[in-house]
Length: 563
RNA sequence: UGUCUUAUGGUGUAAUGGUAGCACUGCAGUUUCUGGAUCUGCCUGUCUAGGUUCGAAUCCUAGUAAGACAACCA
Image 1 (cartoon, rainbow, N blue to C red):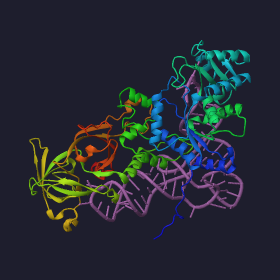
Image 2 (image 1 turned 90 degrees about the horizontal axis):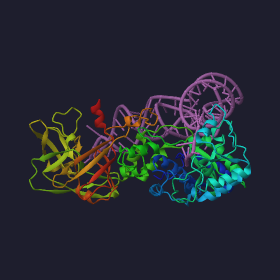
Image 3 (image 1 turned 30 degrees about the vertical axis):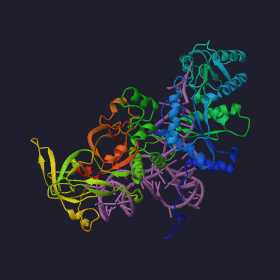
Image 4 (image 1 turned 180 degrees about the horizontal axis):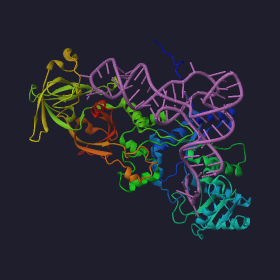
């Protein structure tokens, strides 16, 4: 039957898309749409940035506009080219292309000139008080501030001192340029905000030692947007109180109808996860994780190493939406997005993480058979491959119970199970060592039940994955769990080191996988039957094959046992 | 005892003054050469009180609650 999509509900627009469509309708800014992604190059991108990236680039793409990458590099003390490179790599990995790369540092001269103009207009002055004094004079949200004694100094004096701020003869911390606005404003950011401060002990990663006075965010960001022609300056909710100041600076200098507008959306929070750069840096520096790309980290490089595909990230971002209030997203939603995406593409492989020997006692010794098995039952075009069957096999230790409860459908004496892609076998017993540990399990196969044969349709309740002992290679498998064991570590008052989950990494060294996996590239993703989605770690060597578990499959049986 | 922002199931969101939908989670069932995946069904919601309106989740007022703001960070 021919189907049409007329009845399909159209995807609803978020409030930012609505605003953009309204602006377009009104012909604002000559119908131009321009956004920017403005990271400070002081750390690695994480999944919260991915949310912003998808919005900034997505809006531009959807409405025929452009999105530039701009590094907000106004604080040389914190920034480094290392971060510039990783940021560009991660954006590309997500599948986006910027129109241009800009740096706030490219505008240092322009910003300087405008600041001089502001001083000449009597709207900015040099303050020579200490940071502490200035802070004290600011008052508090409920107490008005008091004016600096330097506030009304002559313009010429400020002008001369501003020049000196940039020559290196003035010590760091002794002099700042402040905008003259309103020391009793109910908005703290209007109480004569600092526009320039001196940084002399760090070279800038692009301008070197050229500048000694550097502009502050509130001044530089809006003007950079303005210089570039940004129409929609999208940022997170904590900047709402900065918006009036953003607009104030724009108003001082704008000379046409064009103006950029700041709009704020909710930042991403995920349960059992910290998203602050400061805390992530601490995890790295204290060795609590192996690095920025530790698969337990919410960084894009960490998620990539863990096996999350760009599609999985996009799928997740599509699910969470953009609003004007903060919330916390369940980590389960991210995991669901990963499963949903990987399920469509991942090759199914047999892997035994906790092996025990299974001997098919009526199968001829020395005989081997090649059996075809599907690469992906969801996707016939993925084809099939052959796996080897023989008398001695490995199966999961958990797939056998000598004394099984009623609802145990796997291997137990007297019960029949299907070996995936092979035969139905009936368990006949097992061998134990002195301590009672299972050493070997025995079964008999039914030759008429080979996969695809007429008699193979017989119903059995359980199906197991397996590997021939002659056709398996050893591998190390790393299982990851949430890094924190409290739902909202960011909100918890305790030192976050006390909140860490001690079992966030389990390393299994005695696992077996199909031999062809040795030749696969790092980061390739697979589904191990019943245990989850895995990928090959970049640290893999010809001698040591290492897998990371991206995400586990949902295990109903485990739940059954917990009751 | 300030200013700003916000409030829809357990969670995340949609409804653009006109039938409160969707997704995740949970539960039940279907199906399966894995109990995963698939498919189906079910549970649970407009912060409170007034007002405007033929009609309010939506607009207004007040209250309540939450978050942001007092860096020479961004």
